[in-house]
Amino acid sequence: MENEKLIFTNSRGESLELGTDSIFFCNVSKDVGGIAGVTNVIYSTNSMGQHGDTYVGQRIEARDMDILGHINTRDKAQALQLRRQMLKILNPELGGTLTYEYGSFKRVINCRTFGEPKIERKSVLYEFSFQLECLNPFWREEDETKEDIASWVAAWHFPCVIDKDDSKSMIFGYRAESVIVDCYNEGDVSTGMRIRFTALGTVSNPILLNVDTEEFIQVNAVMQTGDVIEINTKYGSKGAKLIRDGKETDYFRYIDVDSTFMQLAIGDNNFRYDAAGGVNSLEVAIFYNKEFLGV
Image (cartoon, rainbow, N blue to C red; front, top):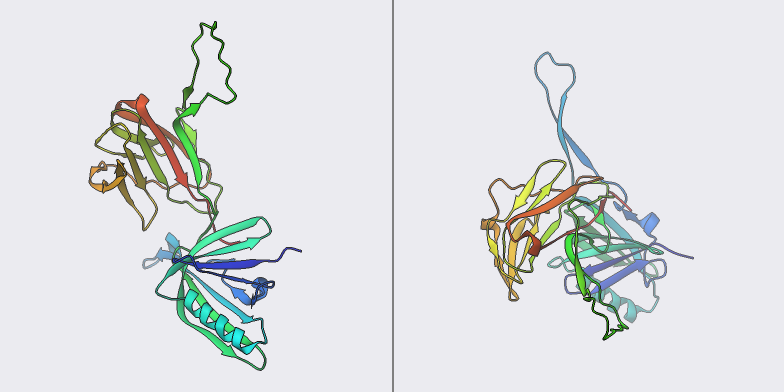
């Protein structure tokens, strides 16, 4: 029988597993609050003589989670050791992630311990309660989705048989060019992305254009062979960097002033790429997480 479980992992890689099968016992469906829904705030305006309000916009607030459970051992020495381990892992100085698992279903959210974790001995067992604050309230898939717009595809496979009398040339790879690619966002909300430009030769002023909205993001710079430029459009992480010979350089100042740090809307998002020069030497890939309101 599959049971729900939560795994908190801090930024040092130390993990705490919570579930009905764990020594840190927690019935996720009953003892955890805040994993399913979100709270939104609606902004509106009104004026004298107006009946009701006019909708302006809304925002989804940060997510708070309350977690209750007990240390499932009657051995006092072991319970004290587990209590110390728990307090160490839930160090408020460290950020972390919370992973929800139910069978093969998995979602991840960034979080941080908020307030004071309480671990108190009751009549038999130690009971614990703590709160997690998720400033980004959305759950996401564990792995990023990658969409290649222009890339080289390997065409040489093993085993390989070469006929010495064959006068035909052998194709080792070919360029897979998608003039337009659809990044379909199956999530519940719009989300940011990482755009990666890779230069296989000299490329000038690479650009990515949203065909539907006519928004674009362009880098006003010349890329050398082997250069990689990554642009992040996620809220709180917006920026651009150049990776050349393994060294990273801030490249935000080279972003065109008319560029938009585009978000992936829910559903279809059609993109195409271009460059002022060397477009056939440009590889473009988009990375993004599908984000969800609950699990």
